Length: 195
Image (tube, rainbow, N blue to C red; front, top):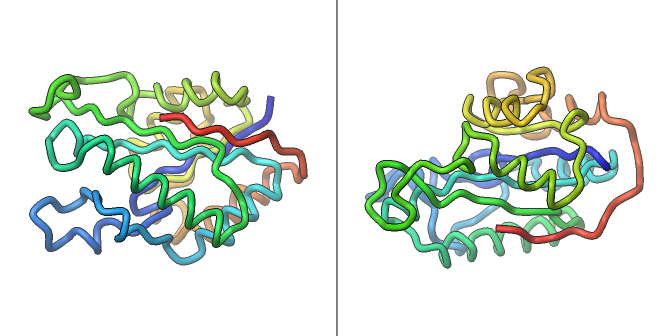
């Protein structure tokens, strides 16, 4: 079993708030053509991989439940993210998990609470089981308290949760915090895609 870095997607790996601020649905990014890596993300992901860490995205996408995006649009954005990471960092993401549920949504069957929706730990627990990850040695990088809360609920020490900008000013600095503590290893397993 190997450790991972669990990564929030929006405003951690890719720009969201600034791109959607003047749209009818701020915070909901549904167009894969708008997906772009934030500065420092490609290099940071490469460094995390070189440190022997699995790279797993865990993202709330309640926009599906609210009828703003479809599952297909979310998956298209996730494919675009994978392509950009592959091209920019030269690495594959081990898994991309997202939760389309939201209790205040109007689109069945997604208009309910779900154990995958952060701050619940479901996505992290599913990834750990699917990819044989050691949660006790894993990390999280995100941009909201709910990201850290999900990680802690999954068994990751709060000291291994890096929230941007509270704990680190940007993604590059967050990766520096992780790689200073992570043992370097070139071992890696074949990446897998999960919803």
